[in-house]
Amino acid sequence: MIRHTVVFRLRHRANSAEEKAFLAAGKALAAIPGVEKFEQMRQVSRKNGYTFGFSMEFADQAAYDRYNSHPDHVAFVNGRWIPEVEEFLEIDYVPL
Amino acid sequence: MIRHTVVFRLRHRANSAEEKAFLAAGKALAAIPGVEKFEQMRQVSRKNGYTFGFSMEFADQAAYDRYNSHPDHVAFVNGRWIPEVEEFLEIDYVPL
Image (cartoon, rainbow over the protein chains, first blue to last red):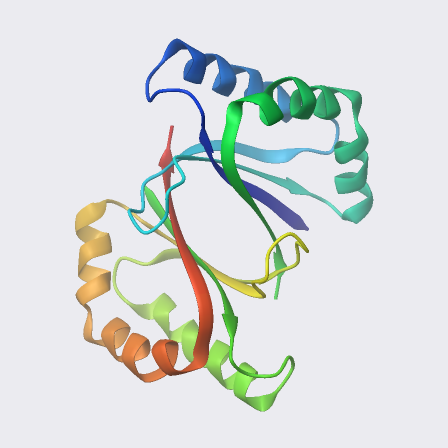
């Protein structure tokens, strides 16, 4: 199992229509084959500057690779993520 | 629900006895009242420099606060975390 997470801050104002639209578009990532336990969350620690996070799990690296190259994921990255995300950090976990 | 996570890198060499001892000591955090779904994980993304992560969930902020001030947590922070952790980032999530 690989848990892929990304924590980020948008260029949009908090609670704006643009923020809501971005998060709604992000939910479609859950439908990409191989994506399990998809979550959208609010980041609330004051010890970093991020405001949202996505988390998902893959059975193995092959499933993760297929997600990365899936046209729906590539379209989301190019069409929404790059233009709308101000700062982000990817963190991926496997069980110890 | 609040999911408290911390991603970190130790001062110890990979696979050293010191690394194993730190992770074993960290498991005791799971026994502190209020801690749910405790996980220790390996961080594997090449897009950051961290190597491990801990994750746990609390029912609410009051449970999180009690954990933070619990003597076993304070002792772990002062006795192991501060001297043995090179770099870390805390990320806390709540459901959207």
